[in-house]
Length: 458
Image 1 (cartoon, helix red, strand yellow):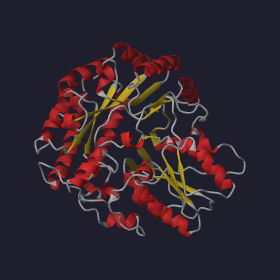
Image 2 (tube, helix red, strand yellow; image 1 turned 45 degrees about the vertical axis):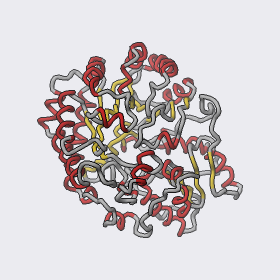
Image 3 (cartoon, one colour; image 1 turned 45 degrees about the horizontal axis):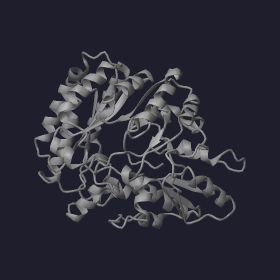
Image 4 (tube, one colour; image 1 turned 90 degrees about the horizontal axis):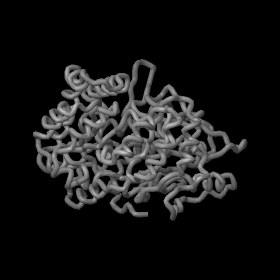
C-alpha cells in the first residue's frame, strides 16, 4: 500500500500511523493461502519502506485516489525492472482507463473471489489483463474467506493494530462519498465468520471497519449479541441514526463499543439536505451527543468545509458548535470531489474543478472552486479551525468534565494537536490549488500529471 505523506506521526526514527491498521493487506494474505511455493511480504508504506530492490515475481499495489500518483510511480519502477504489477483498489475500479497505463493486470471491485483466481492463473503462467468480481446475488458474501493474517502485520505501527469487517457498502448516498459508486449495495458477512475472525485477535480492542454497521438493524442486533460474550472493546463508524433504535443501541453498548466516528458533516441543515444527508438533523446533535456520552462512548465528530451553502462564517460557527457539543475528538475535512462521485460529475459539468492532480485529493487541499468564497479562503479557514479547536485550552474545555475513557480522548486530541501544528509547518501541506509542485515531482518523478479521466465506466 503506497503512502501519500498522510495521517502519520514521526518522533525521530519512530513512526506510527495515526489510524487503525488497514484490513486490505491481511485479507489478501489470507486469500493467498499457505501454498509452500509462494512467499510474500506485506508493505504498508505509511509505516514501512518499500524495498525497491526486492526480488519478486509479482507486485500488487492497492490504490486510493490520494495515493495513486505514488502507486503509479512504484508500478513504473517495478515494471522497468521486469516485474509484472497488479493494481487494485477503489481508484482503479473508478478510473480504469487511467490505471491501465501503469499495470499489467487490474483487479476491479473486492478481491475475495478475484485474488485466488489471479494467484492461480499467475502460477500457471496465464495472468489475465483484468479480473472482475462476480457480485453475490444474496445478502451474504462468501463464507469461505479465511481470517485475516494478523500475524503478518507490524502491530507497533498503528494506533489500533486489529481491524475487522462485518458489512460492506452503505444504504445512503452522500454526494461526496465513493462507497455508493464502488459498492452499490449493502452486503453482510455471516455473523459466525465475523466472530471467528475476532476470536483470533489476541488483544482486547479492535476496530470494526464498516461504513455504518447499524444500517441493517436485525443483522446488527445479531452481531452485537454474539460479541457480548467475547468481552472485547471496539470502535467503529456510524451515522447520527445510531441512537434511534433503543434496543439496538443498548446491545451495541453491551457488546463493548467505546468509540464511534460520526459524520455530522455540517452545522448548516441546508448543506446537509443538498449533499444527500437529510437524515442528519442539526437540531438533534445535542441529543445524540447526550445519549452517546451517557453510555460512556467517545465520539470523533467529523465536519466538512466548502459546501455550496458555506460562506466565510462557517469556520467560526463550526468551532463554536464543536465546543458546545463537547465533541471529544473533532475532525475537519475539505469538501473533495473524488472521481466517480455525484459531486465530481456535477463540479466537472460546472467547470469548477481546479486540479486533477490526484495527490491533492486527500480532503486537506482545495481542488475545486467553492461557491461562496475563494479557494484560498476555504483553505485558510480550514487551517484556522484546526488551530483553534486543538488549542490546549479548547481541548480542556471540551473534555474536563467528562467521565469518558480518558486514554482514547487524550491520545486522539494529542494526535490532532500535533497534526494541526504540522499542517502549518510542513511543506507537504502547503496550499496547492493546481497541484503542479515539488511534492509531485519528488514523489512521482517519472509519472506525468494525470489529466481528467471523465470516462470512468468500465
